Image 1 (spheres, rainbow, N blue to C red):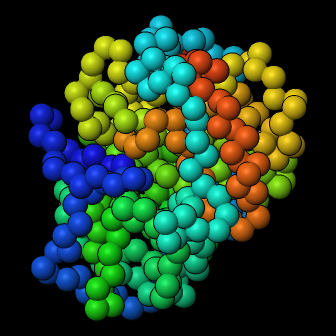
Image 2 (image 1 turned 90 degrees about the vertical axis):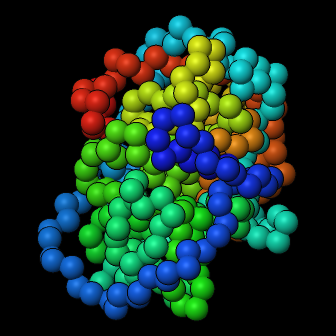
Amino acid sequence: MNLRRAAPLIVFTIILSACGAGPSAVPATQPERIEAQVLESTAIPSPLSGGPAMANCPIFPADNFWNTPVDTLPTHPQSDSWIESIGSTEEFHMDFGSGEWDGGPIGIPFNIVAGSAVPNYGIEFYYPDESDPGPYPLSDDPLQEWSSDHHILTVDSDHCKLYEIYDASLEDGLWSGGSGAVWDLNSNALRPADWTSADAAGLPILPGLVRYDEVAAGVIQHALRFTAEDTAGYIWPARHLTSDAQTGIPPMGARFRLKADYDISNFPQEMQVILQAMKTYGIVLADNGSNWYVSGAPDEHWDNDMLHLLDVLTGNDFEAVDTSGMMIDIDSGQAK
């Protein structure tokens, strides 16, 4: 669920659904399609050693916040109250899988394109002041999230850039959306302060998804994205809030980890990969939605019954992490 704010103390009306929320009107003025173009050629370095990668691109530098372990960091002073707010006895849910649910794929898919070989579109956003204008490279039939958030995530493998759109809509061959963000996958740069992205926290979505290819490879080297019903304020590296800061309510960007003494040895190997990532890299609060819903990409290789074994997790099995010591620069996602 995405809750958006244009300015402090102003909260926009939302349309609730099972998985998300957001205004659904399509702007009257439609954007124009920009034909495929070859962007200025630049040398793209190989993915940095040790960090996650996709299509010969890093998913942000290896020292990015998403890719930095938190298993040795101190527990946050508000850990107990934040977990109680989300639900100390509430069960986790892996919000991805194989097949369909309610008529569409389960999870948030992503697209990989050669940006110079597909059409690029100017998109009319209804949060234009906090959106990157693009253009956005989109294939003729891009994979799109089925829930009401209607995210489209696209990796341009030519230029190692990530394009993310919230509430994307196609009408008469023209695209519109709620908000959009463009990320340089070789950079630790964050959104401007107080800006949203395609996610309510102002963070990228793709680096926090559980992907089957990583599980099959035997290791996930990054934190995972999750949602909670109530959030208040934001902390680094998040850039955007949906409600004002309040003691006892977790802020956007809060990071939690599975407790070190939680025994994962009896789970199937595939699930141990996910659980170990939760211990080593943790989970990041990135959007408003159902409590303890962990995001991932749909894939026909997922065993949904196996994923449901993780429903046994509850908030009591986690602790909030004090990530303040990781920050090098408030405007950078680089971590130490």
